[in-house]
Image (cartoon, rainbow, N blue to C red; front, top):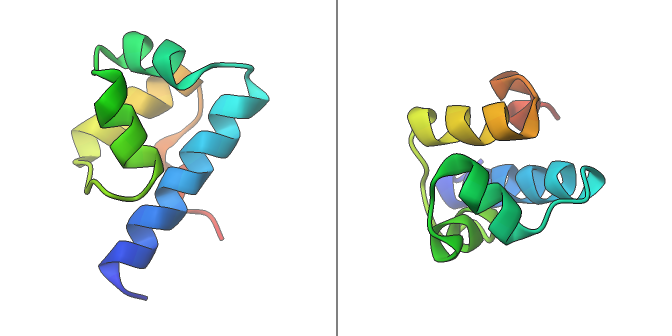
Length: 71
């Protein structure tokens, strides 16, 4: 799997989890203390987030970090 494919998959998982919690992208960005544009880049797979960033997202979504890497 290419790195960009992984970024896209993680972004899609974040988006899916966020939507199941009825959160907007802006809601999640605010909960993580990010700019909405940053959250948009992460969800679209255009950004390579650090583990610290992924952790903050998972805390806001109330899921373990490993959830983002499940097949």
